[in-house]
Picture 1 (tube, helix red, strand yellow):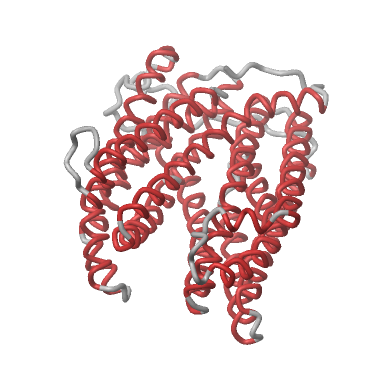
Picture 2 (cartoon, one colour):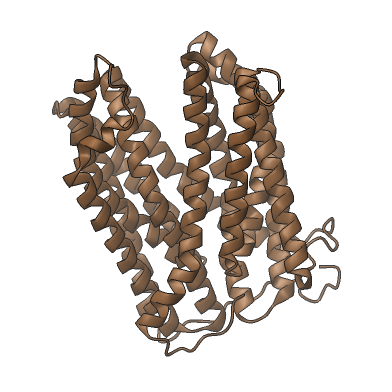
Length: 469
């Protein structure tokens, strides 16, 4: 539970608080990452065609999911600031309207899932791959509803600093996903062999178990918030507040995701070997990025709590500690990438693959770039987390979009193709885009943090007098 802390908490106290809060969040993100890895590995065992189709389908799903998840991320700082003052009604209102917006968004996104085959064909994908991906999404696409609801309720729990619960719910989901995939893809444990459609049903089952688990926990452990009371009753003021912050968050994340998507397309222009090496390096970098993402969530919660108390000293000290923690992790992982790149790349390669040496050579150079990549990606993630804690989302969205799409993507193309630097050039563009975002966003946060004599206490919105909400 969130408890008011002293404004004079030492840096050591902040380190301990960040560890208690952040480590379970990091573990939860790693477990979530493991779900995607499990899907990839098991479908890779089943067939290359199925793997290609589901990879395409999951990418399509993720684009729509990450845009809608902005509403869930907007719930986290509102809950954290309300919890700091013991405002149970505001906690309930923010969470309920996050659920409302997620369901409404799911209604918009679901037709895209249903007609995904036509969309993918129009985007120039091969007919068979598009057909298989469409068949996958007509089942797995329904998971957009429970997936977004889970994100809202996890944000609610994280905002209350119940991050252990977030971790264990995600671990349970990981185990359910692995077992369901093994049974339904291959026909084990008496289940029919369903291949690609089995993977879709496993994904849907995982999301369903997750949402039931997180609802059960929330009602059992936090009855004082009475989340389901008058759930049908609209709260237009709070809905507007969550929408106003959630849409920019979703668009910001979408801009970043699309930067990496563009880099993958460019690496594909360089050939299969370059794309394979890129995929390996991105997977390794993505795994370590989960640590920065967990710290970013913790930063949002810590700043949101300080905002609720109007405690500027607490916010500044916490921001310093989380930024330094991210730097330490980035330096440690960069050293691993620089000193032992070959074993990391070889983990993903068949020893008998005739292209192994070519992929290894490119992969080693990209992992060296990933060392710098980690530092810059971590900084922009932490900066975004800090700003979200202040409910500052509009200007950061513009900064991120300019950094990723005015600096990052054009630089990747120019260096990679016009200057003939290949994959290293593409990755240099990535680093410059992320560096620009990190610098702009950190400057904006510290101007907010240090440019005021004191931090204003987060205020509620209209509607508090209505007993129905």
